[in-house]
Length: 252
Figure 1 (cartoon, one colour):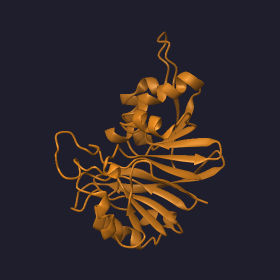
Figure 2 (cartoon, one colour):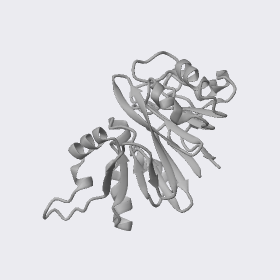
Figure 3 (tube, one colour):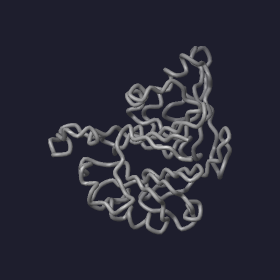
């Protein structure tokens, strides 16, 4: 299973419009961050996690030609507003792709993007996604996908675990009831917004503290803001690193 970080940035992206801070002016390509999303390739299957605002750009950059399924973590704009870019894949393959999310997330998606999920009589537009409510672990192709409930400030989000890999973006706490779902994870991608505290996201210090009880071999901090210079990853403890757009790694 190959994992690709499609986007490693927070909701504004980096550079942020109107900003001239050192990170936004950085010449390090790893400091240029599109909105957070993930690609999972397993055999001949390609699974997308979130349709970020920058999906078209990310898919072109990584040469993505087919999407077999979509997992949604939650319905915030930076994670879903690229959903219309799925039409390009549909125009070529004409398949309705399975998608998975919490009922609350689908409620927002179907209100904001109803044409993605159902055909309007006489419109000529066919659905692109088939919705499947997530209530617990499910089978996707030959993989077991385990949803991991997370706290995202005053709201909630879902992380996902597949095998020894877990993706926990947009979270400010991992509920005690979710910790057993993460036992034995070896590679963890987790929210680590910035150095300073934030009410709706782990910042770097709290992300590190949360991960220590899970003890993965490798931890990658994502959803990074323009307060984080990639080169400062040398300040992180052993086993921790910053994500960057296009980062790839294999999970046995």
